[in-house]
Structure formats: structure tokens, C-alpha cells
Length: 400
Image (cartoon, rainbow, N blue to C red):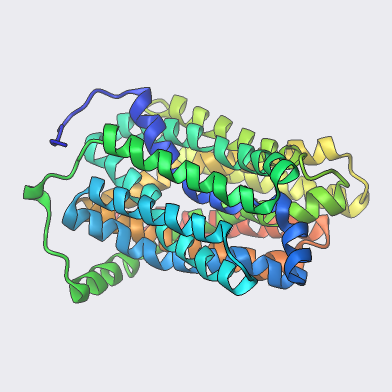
């Protein structure tokens, strides 16, 4: 497909980029309702079962360092088509896995390929648009993307009830195949040959290190990653919260995910409306305050009255997610603009930092905290405060 330098903004392009980014949350969340069945079939402990998430996230994080530079060298379309095709094959292998070891191996392959869509989609946005227009498109993509974690466990719950846990992975096969076909048909190439450069492993390591060691980049990446972890803790503990703490059923994961995603979508919508009207600094400050305040109120309420109504908990979780999403688009665009000639690599390194934080949260923090709603709320408060502090240090950097 030929390069179109300045296509008109459209809901179709935003939807395609959002769906490409959805592969990862669908891979994480769709099979949450199947946790008890998988544990029973393979005789797993809770900690062992949680590693189906960690073994996905670790290769996901490391390969994020490759997807962006590969797209800088070979074009955006090629990397997305190749990555999503391999993801589809890995999902099929998960559905047919005869044992837990095989399932883990192909979960790792899923993780190694699922990030291509998310990383390259960000680079495509910045290839095409700048300034407030880029922020609006990024916010629109985030709004559409936000539906994935909400609907994924609901879809997975019903598929599990009707057909069993293996059918959940077959659903991911169909999703991946659909993304390959639509991307082949509709995704423009936004990084033409004259802007590409030869990919060399040594150069890739040096470039990644140059980006990661940049003071403002590191501070802002850690800030947005830790802030996001305040919500990820709830997502990672979803089976324990929904099934054990709130005493709901396998098809009722929406009770947790709708507040989370509702907050993300509302925050993304507000961010888009603020573009060009409210300064980025004020918007970030507001987002951090909202998240920290909501997590603090949740912690205090649970400390004083452990039987806080589910509805009240949902409202406060919504507020944490809302604050997170007010901050996300602003910091993401700032990071991409720190290295305008290698935006694919920047997106990769940022994704790597975020996923490593997520992997630690899912693999170590969540198993330690998921037995108590109060501990989860305190963890969310810690993530919001840590992100806020790092952001304040970064904003005071000389480059400002």
C-alpha cells in the first residue's frame, strides 16, 4: 500500500489502531473467568496460576524494545502484519496445549508478539499528526481501546460457561485473524522508505540505552507506569476480588472492569476536550490529585469499615482510573517528542518500562496483596503518589 502523508482524521483509523492495541488487554483479561477451571485441570496453586500472566508480560516487555525499531527500519505495516500473524498462531497453540508447561510456553509467545499493534499504533499517530490534533486522536484511540478490558472478561466468562476455557483462546485466534485481514486492507504505511534506516543490533542497544538513560524520559516513564499500576493492581487481582471478596459469579467480571474502563474512557474523553484549553501541566496535576485522593478515601473507608458497599468501591475505583487517564496521553506525547526521529524506538522503550512495572505488579505485588481489599487500596495509593512525585521532579527539569 502506498504512503499517504496526511490522511484526514477518521473514526475508522482510530478504531483500527485501537483494536490493534486491544490484543494485549484481551490476552490478559479474557481468560480471568477460567482461572479456577485451569487451576483444577492442571492442579495449580494460586501463585502458579498467576504466572500465566507473568510469563506473558516479561517477553511482552522485552519485545516491545524491538517492535518500534523494526517499524522504524522496515515500515509500520510490515511489523504489524507479521506480529499479529504470529500472535494468532500462538493463540491457537494455547487453545490446543496438552499441559501447563506447553500453555506457559505459548503464552510467552503470545506476549512476544501482541505488543506490535500497540507500539506501532502510537508511532502511526505521531507520524500523521502533531500538537492538539495528535492529543485528540490519542485520546479517541484510548477511549475505544478502553472498552477491551471491560468486555474481555465478560466475553471470556460466557465463552467459558458455554464451551470451556480452551474456547477462550480460540476466540483470541479469531480476533487476531480479523486484525490481520483488516490491517492488510485498511492500514496505511506512514513511515516511507526515505525515512527508514538500517537496523543493527548494536545500534539498537545504543539507541535504547540513550533513550532509557535520558533523565526526563526515565522520570516520566516511571511516573506514568507507576500511576497506571495503581489500577493494574485491581485488574491483576480481579479473580480474587470478583469471585472471593465480592462473591460474584464467573460471568460478572464486568462489575469490576466497567468502573475501571468507565474511568479510562471518561478520562480520555476529558483529556481530548481539554486539548488546547487547559495547560498540560494543569491537566497532569489534576489527574494525579484525583487518583491519589480516590485511593486515599478507599483505604480510609476500608480501614474503618471492611464491609464497604461494592457500589462505593466501584465509584472510587472509577475515580482512580479517571485520574490515570487524564495524565496518560499528555506524558505519552511528551515522551515521543523527546526523540522525534525515532518515535518507534521511543514507544518501544516506554512500553518496556511500563510492562516491567506491570509484570512486577502482577507477578509479585498482586499475589501479596490480593487477599485484602485494604492492602490493594493502599497499593493503589502508593502507585499514585510515587507517580505524582516523579512527575513533579521531571516537570522541574531544565528542559522545561
